[in-house]
Length: 190
Image (cartoon, rainbow, N blue to C red; front, side, top):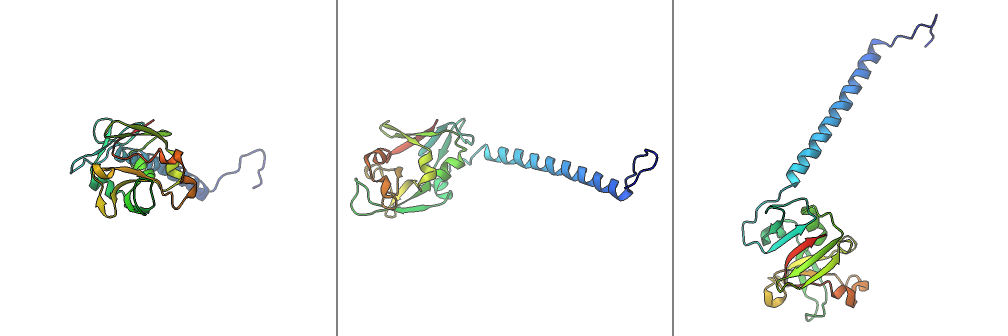
């Protein structure tokens, strides 16, 4: 646009309207995005209450809880996160049983885990630290069934960390076997 005598060029009425609309739209979208983030955080901050007997507790560096600063789960809640089946041999069972459970990475997402290590605690207070990175690298499950039957304490239940070692031969070693914690009652995220 040409100017004469140093006068500023005038913006057309349409240009003013478009600039104003663009500014309002951008501000409105930023406000809406902020509200969605706050709503998501509010909804994610709590989990539903177990309807059956709670047999798993998750504590530590988690953002989503349903029992004070902890998250507790019954079987139906774990099944509600999706069932994953893993058929694999183990040093403690015959053949290649089929285990059913929830993917560990999905369970940790549900509780908003923020740590790098999980301490698995068994019914007898035996504890093992497991790197959370394992759950991103492999489809590790927290099993509650073996060959279609709920795991009982005598069968290493109620919960057992299962690595799919037959699908990933690099998992067939003593270091990984030490992380196959059974009779789990608690997971602590740190």
